[in-house]
Image (cartoon, rainbow over all chains, first blue to last red; front, side):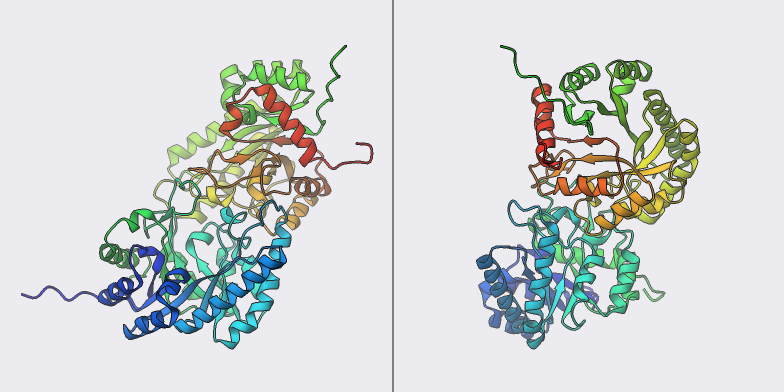
Length: 288
Length: 288
């Protein structure tokens, strides 16, 4: 007797590399292919380690697409030399995204420079950097995707803290050059989220969508406490439905930073992610 | 030779009891009196332990005023029995505030009920509870002061996460019945803060102002990581100036939850708070 044929993963699902960080890039590609996952979100460090051209070939030959590259950004340095270095690094990130064939470079804008309390100034430098980089990216077929991060990261990681703020920034540029990333973990708490998602959709600004759940208590440093889909406080199905209602039809990345997942077998984690994605994100249809 | 006469503490300064939690209520009152501090923010638990009437007498006889009582709230239970208990407890908090002679009861609205993902529903229950309690409070000369807490507390502590949201809620009621607490720690990251502080001031809604600084990394649970004034990322002077420009003339409470302060001598902590308040919050004048 043959084992039952595996149900292919939903075609809208993309697996962000951080979710199964224990896997090498070839393991990720092979694992996703075996599970029927058709898209992956990649990170710069492992891509550079493997070589962007080789990574692009590996992914393409497995029939996968790259939903986004994480991440450019860190635009807030005030020192001229640091600022030039950040811009150069972002041009390299754009080149890597183009090499991978992804149209989306996610941007984590950066926090306050050490000792600074000038949040408005840091935010202005983000806008300035976008103006320098957007044409370079557009020429290479890459859209810059501003990711608002949860306000608990405003000091040390990202001074763009809400979807409204990200859209205000993006709207200084053509929609095909600068969009936004909407990530449930960062945005779920915001009472203006429904109207801002609709605004983002109307303006064609949603470049990527990511999911993780919110679980408490938060760990020290608040970086590695993202929850598995269904374990936390977020109405993930509602979030996804709003993103869809806003007109977004692209891949939905599951991006969970969580050491408990990294300590497990990658194949088992991936199967669980797919199962939880079906249970907590997809909308049941009469045919299910 | 006599020691130099101590410089009296700024008259706008109030010390929230949590900042020197190692002190009993009598120690707090004696310590503030000795340092020339003229107002204190009190918490319900130590007040009830001492007895509200006795606490009121103790504070009054020392020439101090009570800038606020912390805290009512926790309005989000969906179970009818829990909900009734929460409302009864809030009526008791209002009575205690009235007994202490403070016009301000700070409200921490509560998080999601266990297992719930219905953030909008929890927020509606906050509005419903305000409607039940505001007249009771007003009859006793107490104003309910909605405190927006940092969005990192939305799941487990307070579903009111921004000043705009708190004002939207407050505006369902007369300004003398329902106001807001503006706390630098919770609000500093918000790019709409200047316009929302101005809005709050115009509408006469600022019932209390609290200060703590933002320091990273956040500790596990993110509750006890508030920074001493000047140690973190917040432009506290700018925050206070905006609150003043909005028309607020009431006391400014320093409220720092930080075990490192609680482990030290209370008199030394209080002297340091006053010194840092002068250095980081007050605006220097030509006569200083």
